[in-house]
Each structure stands twice: as structure tokens, then as C-alpha cells.
Length: 340
Image (tube, rainbow, N blue to C red; front, side, top):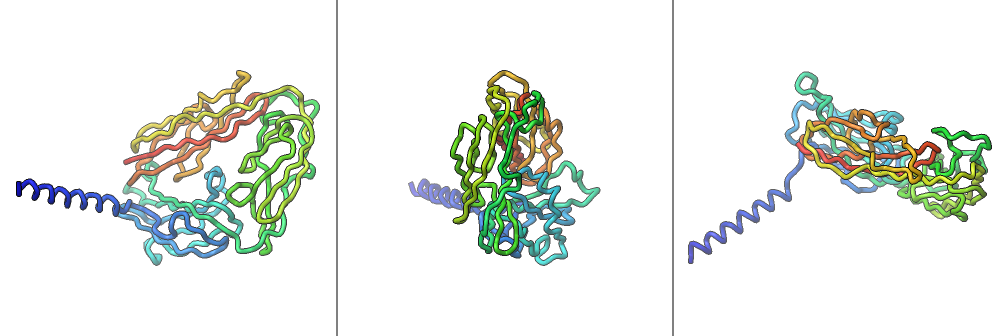
């Protein structure tokens, strides 16, 4: 009996140690500072501290800012790297980074390792980490405006049923809402995470979602009210398009996937459909993770080769579809988790 209780005691100690080891594991290549989900002011200088773990062959780390949920690659094209850090920086591969002056709402801070050429095939490796940061301007919002004609008009009497028209029922587009702040900075405040709320007085003409995606529903005039930080603005929207009814297509990007490094990955959106039975155009884009070379992004089945990662990493993709009459779906998202 004494040996039995001794065994129970030892087993309990081992189980406790195992749990402690698990909960204190530090993943390789992690942004230690700033903390995930922390809040900073636009334009503020932020200290960067990076734990590279046991990842070798790193010559530099590139840091980028981009708005959460937006097409990452388009954002990165428009922005220069915010910081390039090397082992000589203090701390190594860290330093100080400035929050973009025009930022507001939820942003991602992306850190991507530059690997030594000749040691590894750098195109096949994805060594990165990213965190969410909420950004608040210290300046006051003075007024809200729209970067478009006023009133906003849609419609051409002689429109043909072709792609890329903006004046068909079911067409969806991002409203260009800006805020002018007391520090002289103009910031995009279209997204919900910037504090913006929308109200449409006639949803038989247009509808708008929380992130400012405007959809043409029917002919007529509607008044759109935008509110943010105690300010508001009203936009008149006039729709005079063809009277043929057209239901917008429905996006289905498939189920989330977990894959191994080096695996071929298929993004299959063929379950998307047009209620009228028409054909669709597809557009896949990446909104999270380090840059991936996506093959056939304008087809129902896009493909890529899962990169090698030192630790489990998440890549997120967005799919939108358009029917032959120009109606767009709302975006849908797919997560691909890559494990070593």
C-alpha cells in the first residue's frame, strides 16, 4: 500500500511538471513587445522586442502595418516597410516602430524574417509573427465626409449586361468615408472598428453592412447617415438602373483546413452560387499571414504550396464572387493552419 501511494505522489508531480512545461512554452519567432490586443495612439513610437527562439539564419526582420481584414497584399504595396531590424539593433531584431499617423481602428503588426541566402530556400519558408493593435487618434474628429460626388448617383440607361459595371442591382462597393481630425490628418473611417455606424432610411434602394460595403438593391433615393465620435454626416444616394431583378451571388470558400508544411493546398470556392443559376467570376485575396504566391486567384480553385514554418501559423484568405450582371457577394473568409 505504501508503494502504491508513493507511485500516486510521483505521478502527480510528473503531471504537474508536464502542465507547467506546456503552459510556459515559448514559440519560436514571436513578437514579445508590444503585447497582442494592446492600444496605442496614431503616430506613437512603440518599442519592439522579438524572440527568435531557435530559428537560425535570420539576417533581418521586416515589420509592416496593415488594417485588419483588408487585402493585405494591396496594403503592403501602398506602404513602405515601417522598420527593418538586424542583429545589430538594440534589442536584436527589434527597436522602435511608429504607428502610422493615418491609422485608426484595428491594425496588424506583421514581422517577417529575412533568411540568409544559400542556407535555405527562402521562397519555401514563412518565418513570421503578427499581432493585433488597436489604434486611437489623440486628436478630435472635426467632421465626416465622403470621397465621391454628392449626391452619389448610379445608373446608365443603356447599360449592357457585362462584367465590371457599377450600375446593376446587386453591385457591392466599399463606401469611401473619411474623417477630418483636429491634428490636420484625414483618416479612413469606413470600418466598424474605427467607431463608425451606418443608418439607411430606405433599404429597398440600398443596404450597407457594418464595414461600409454598400449594395444597390432597387431604384429610388435613399439617405445614408454616418455617425462616429459624436459627429454625423448624411449622403444622398440616387439609384436609376435597369429594372431587371438580380439576386446577389452567395460566397462559399469551403471549410477551414489544417495542413503540413510542403503540402499542396487547394482553395475551393466552387460551392459558391448565383441564385439565378448564372456563371461566376472569382477573386481570392490574402488578408493574414506572410505573403504567399497564390496561383489562379481569379478561378474557383486557387492553389499554393504550404510554406515551411518553425511553428504552427495561420493564413487567412478572402473570397468574393461576381455574377454576369455585375452583382457581387459579400466577402467570406477561409483559414489555413500550417504546421511543421
